[in-house]
Length: 154
Image 1 (tube, rainbow, N blue to C red):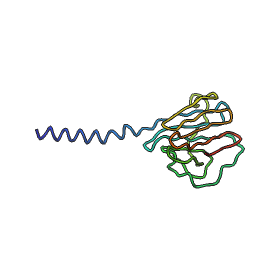
Image 2: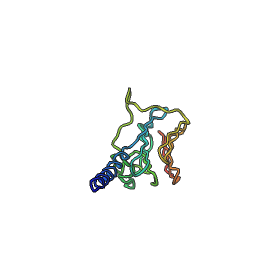
Image 3: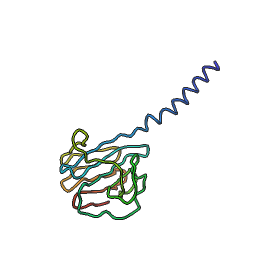
Image 4: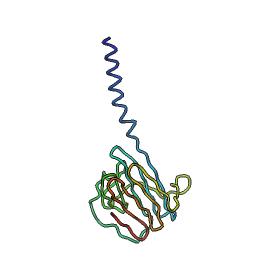
């Protein structure tokens, strides 16, 4: 009887240790705008859903700010003070630097979406519009819109 109790306890502890590892794997969705100039990645991590977008060529200047925390995009290696728009569940949109590439060609290129297409992860939804790519957090109402010509943080 004592051995069964120890075995049951060991199995419960092992299951508790192993379960978070299974859930820690992040999912990810990448896409390009119809022009191929805006690329975004949505994903999840333990902290929740997030999105970051890069604009390959743009005419605007990103504000110099350190308000975008390194952890604003869970699962990404990022720094404040970049040109990538970021939004994480429960956070305000901001500019930061994400060390990752989206603009590949060939078999590694993300899919190109059409105008009106949407992609969602958690409470974050991005929509490809004629005037740019908009991403919003349905929980907070926080959002951003980005294109070659302009950006807007809401």
